[in-house]
Image 1 (cartoon, helix red, strand yellow):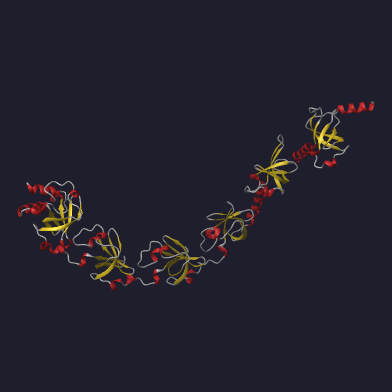
Image 2 (cartoon, rainbow, N blue to C red):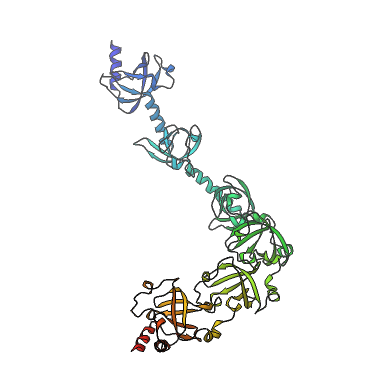
Length: 551
């Protein structure tokens, strides 16, 4: 009895503080839990789930527990073995590690925003701190062991934040500095294609990135770097430029191969015939590959002597094998000018032998424009009939008034300009000018018949014999005032009229419909009124002149 009192007094003298680690002995084992005595006035209950191996729980076994509370609702001590282990590990980690220290840990699972890592205590690895580039697939890291750097320790929340990226960056920087110390221009190095852009590729030289520009990949034509490289590919490159202060490295592949432009004049002398393949078609010309790395340009103007080719694609196709003539070489600029039309003789060199000014020629109307008609004299040789050279008697506003595409016509050669490759033709010059004998055909006072061909605001044009047009001024249509000609006349109407003016110099014939039944004296008055209007004077002045003549 006395010994039991002593033991109870000894237990009572011990201090029990919540959230501290205490030792306890298993005094009873049940189905899935055990009764533990920590020397306090009451005992505690521990679930088997608190242990990774429940078989170690036997009567008399001693373990360490975290004292969470001195009493629960049943007056029992609240204990946790797993929390005691976690606290011991946490205290151990915190005492041994500070922010910035390297630790090793195993990735246990993927969580929102990153990964959980076991470094003795569970720690958080943000997704942005896993690698240099945040990976899309986080599952690939689960179960693997890596080195990490402790970024932050929060003792209150029992939280540790890790970084793997900072260690990778540090290692990369160390590698880069070692690499920079050994690099020199002209070195040949192995690298891995890290990224591909439109203008080139970035190559990882094991710690330092270098730029491989598209123009330094091949002596030949490349539309895009991806035609030659792919990400992750290991390639051999040469250092062609090096700026250690700015840590910039320019790389090349083609520099490791002979420059095909070195003896270009010997391979392709100016004037020589060459064969090649069309590799690119642009609006201004076609690029022809003569050999790998050597391309020449056939300008659109060098495709034909005679045909007006708008685009090279009209006569050439990509991949087509063609023959051409070397026109010029610019070695420093790596340019070769080629010509296809030079394979044939220029027909314009012989045009003056075949065609003479003043000669009559036949041809087919090939095209109509606002200013004239192009007439094909032979394959590749066209002449042009200007609208002013289409009729002696009519004012032609557009060639379609008398010609259509495909018409066979007789013309007269007016001029030949070999330098500009132009032949001027005349249609009206194939017949006599009726105005040279106009007085014998039309006299003032003659009663004439004709058809209305055009109507203007000031009058109507009437076609007479010999394809000569006369003008009926608005004031000469009727005795009554005419506001709008179209209310009285229309194109195609057959009319009778008196000739009241013949102007050979200005090629004008004035007509009067209202004077068709006039006496000779009345016709003479209308003629004098017409004479009062000066050549080139506004036709609107005619009406005033006629009004004066009537007074």
